[in-house]
Figure 1 (cartoon, rainbow, N blue to C red):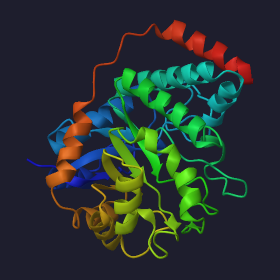
Figure 2: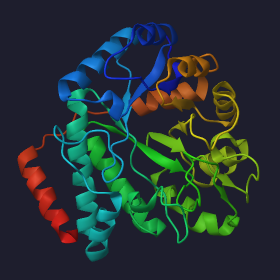
Figure 3: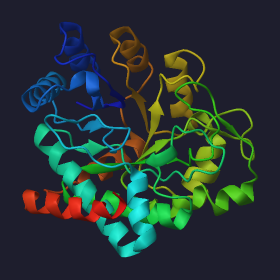
Length: 337
C-alpha cells in the first residue's frame, strides 16, 4: 500500500491504542522522535518496532540529533556532542581538520542512532547567521561564510551516510538571517536578492544533491512579500528548485510552529500546493495528527520519485572501531576546549 505524504510525531514512550490505529489507517511515510519519546535503548527500539508494525512497513524514522543545544539522545545512555560552531572553530585553525572532525562526529552520532532503528538525522544545517540575527540558529551554525558552512555541512552529511543514516539538509533556503525564532513567530527578511544569492542561498548550492531537505518558515520579501518559503510557490520555483537547484525530497519544517498561519490542515495544503513533497508534523497530539493526515495525499509523481530516490541511497554502515573513533574525536575537539 502506498505511503501518504507526511511524517508524524508520537505522544510518548509507547504507542497509545489511538496512535496504533491511526498509523495503520493513515500510513505515514515516516516518523519523527523527540525527547518525550526517548528513555533508554530498549524502550526506543521497542517503540520504533511497534510503530513500524502498525504501519506495516519499515518506514524511515527521523530525529533531530545535532549536538550542542539540539539533541534527542543524551546521557546517561548516549554521548554528548558539541554544537556545530565547534567544528567551525577547528576549521578556522585547520580546514582539513575541521572537515575531518565534522565527518567523524556525524559518523559517531549515526552509530548511536542506527542500532535503535533511527535511520534519518535532521542534519546538517546550511544556515549562515549574520550579526543581529535571532539566536535560534546561533552556535548551531558552522560558520559565517557560505563556503565554510557548505564544506562542513557536506562533511557531516557524508559522515551520517557512512554510518548508514540519511541526512536532512535544513533550513532551505536559509534561516541564518532571520531576526525571529520561527517556532514563535514569522521571521521576515528584507535583504535584497543579490545579497541573498551571494550569501544565504549560496551555502546550499553545493549541497543540492543531498537526498532530503527541510524548508525554512521564513519570508524573503525580495521574492515573495507574503508567504514564507514553506508555502511560497515562488520561493520553491525560483530559489529552492531554481537558483539553489535542490534535487532531493523536500519536507516542511514542523507545521505546528507559530510562524505558519491557518489551521494545520490549511498549512498542510498550502505547503503541498507550493511544491513541498512532504509535510512534517511533530507535536504528537492525536487530534492534530488526524487534521494533518486528512489533508495529505498518497505519494505520487515527482514526490514519490524523490522519496524513492532518497531511500535508494541508504547503505549499510561502514565498519568502524567505535572506542578508537571516540578517542580520536575527543582529541580533535580538544583543539577548541
